[in-house]
Length: 300
Ligand code: 13P
Ligand code: SF4
Image (cartoon, rainbow, N blue to C red; front, side, top):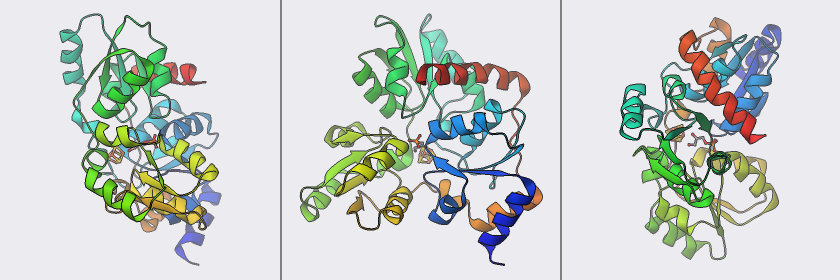
């Protein structure tokens, strides 16, 4: 039996559900029961009937699944697969930020710890940030944490007063430059640019469409000849499912190192040893769930 067959056999025996984020390597995405962006995976985790969920992604995603589905045991195959952006704000820093802006509401990007979610009014993902901001009255001041790029872009779209925390994703902030874009425009004339809203606002300003990874997948299914500004492992996957389309990564070296930590042997070992279970302090989980539930209510 090869490793893929072993994983498949074990997940059936244990009735485990494998969820994979779009940035996971192709063999993991191909094996997963479901794959998707942060919002799609949150909804799937909440609705999952299985008592064992193996989350191939980064810690905040597995934590979100554990909060939304407290009945399930949620495993993260590599314990230190984290998100540097999520670590750019702590609950203590958010409490201070709120104290500096009394009366302001807090929208937290899902790329944040459970403790930060517990201190926020509503959560959002890259696919619903504009809708979530629009749910607030026009004159309300909103604190947006931790992604300055998503917060700035979504505030412009929603026409809301937003104060952003200066956090960012290193892959999207530093991964794409005007030089990358000029080179690719020269070698791929006529190609459109689709960009993730975590990209620097200079790149976002050049994009034909600004999309979450789930929205990108849909857009790619309906379009061709595209330059893609997000984690290049996802572009590899899009090319794998659309081998006849002309798709090119804006920077083939812009890859999330944390997402790449999970390999097939890690997934097998997670299933065999039921590790690493993601546990959230019950009080933090209860308060964070309010903020996630509010997002799910507003995004349906
Ligand atoms: P999506 O929700 O668009 O998949 O984004 C998650 C993420 O971490 C992007 O860096
Ligand atoms: Fe975090 Fe960036 Fe990796 Fe997404 S790509 S998980 S934001 S470090």
